[in-house]
Length: 163
Image (cartoon, rainbow, N blue to C red):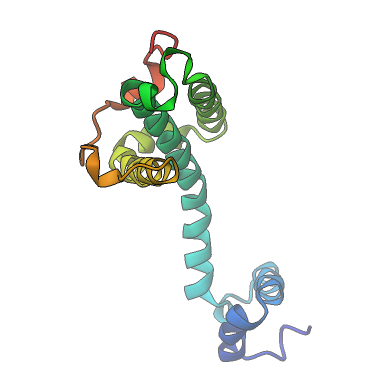
């Protein structure tokens, strides 16, 4: 598509109608340094979202860790006693390894993630409630704390083999 033919308003409308074409045209406009025609509002939003997607992935890994730490500390008897929890330990280990890789690739995330523990805990609590419900329990019968019972350091370092 010839970028000179499309108006700025048509380009904005393309964002919702044909995203790949919107990307292609904006990229071409940037290459041509036709900055006045670029859909800056949506482009800036997209750039912001790109930065957040990696942080969201880290929050998700942290939520898995917190969920499974809590299960190991509180629900082994429900899940089958002392032999329960091997899949939770594996999941914690895997999530920690994934976080290490993310931090190696994107060092700024290592600084940001500790401030996201509350978000991660909220996700973990939702998953805990779903897990309890799926296993025949009323989640409201359990006193899952609103505030995260683990520190960020616990999430990354707590010895899971002794749980």
